[in-house]
Image (cartoon, rainbow over all chains, first blue to last red):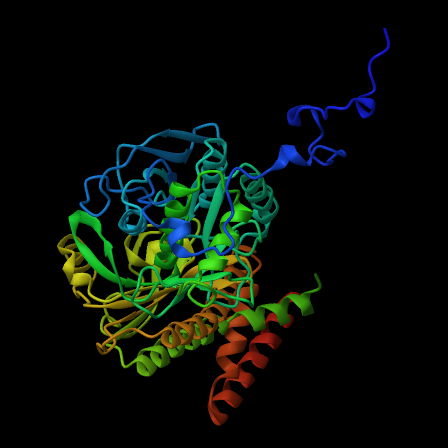
Length: 285
Length: 216
């Protein structure tokens, strides 16, 4: 018996049977958005009432001190290292934070999204040599784990890693993992913040954690609080720091808040919401 | 490579290390002065040992810390190197462990510090730190940009120093004595008028003696 020609059928094919790059006539009803988009996107619509509950956030950094009161616990912690055979290994991590950077970032995310689920992926702290391979392996693991948001307050200048990083950030983008990466204020090429599939963050000088600006002159896309920020520090202490490293987790926290309320948003939609609610766009409403 | 070319390369290499080190010290000194800081340090990453080395220091510690080493991913300089991100800390003494570690390493506990990675092309070469600039109500991003400009200068100087050091090592390892000849030439070149002439006469005599021995 001849197979029926799908083009002759009155009913369009189920979405999962169609190639993802085409939209046959009559199938548009299948791609209605799960999120009801309002006429005006306000901050109240975007994250009003959200505490980041149910959102899985990854801190790709030097580890996280789970005992620090500003961190408020960590769901899981892994460490990436280079094994005896020269291959990278991802193992459970019981050492916490080796230098304090990851703990500082985790505390900022927690301050904005108190109910998000934090996972630490330690890629820094084991020496400079091999740190590029470890960073790549950590990011690859985070993308495979399908975290909702990954905070990357770090970058690499090695061009040999740029291509693979680009592939990974694109894969994350299409798998609905939002990468939030620190930008550089120095005249060098570094990655992955320069890629358009990530949310890149620089600092502004204001003291409000919810003040953030869209930059119409990329590659840096957003400016968040990064000057004189009180952060969690080693040994349960707190300290005041300045740097894009600390602006980045502010945007990560905001992403977690929005996704806590609108879990179906794609990275593109989330970035659009951030644009529409930026302090220099519609954030005042 | 011809002998003439070898000699020319050797002459270019010998002595340049010291010049580049002075350039690096000058960058550290200007950074300290511009920010009105107590001290400023430049660390070089030794990739072979995976350590950071105090390479140039202006202000406190200049006579004691030069050449000291520590693991590349520890301390504030380590963070900055591995994250490639500049960092400013207002009051490090709030962390007793940090203060203790720092004091044990250097004998000096700064209150605040600015640290920036030294990046040249795609390499991370080291870190520039500025310690204890005067406290202001709030750090300004303009200062961060200024720090970035100094970092660029320091990175270039550090790259020159690293290359000169490597070239001198290659020269010394070549085993044909080219480094000794080049060093001698540089020394004579740097002498003042009369001593230089005397040095040249001495070398000319030495040349004649060696040639006559060759012949006989």
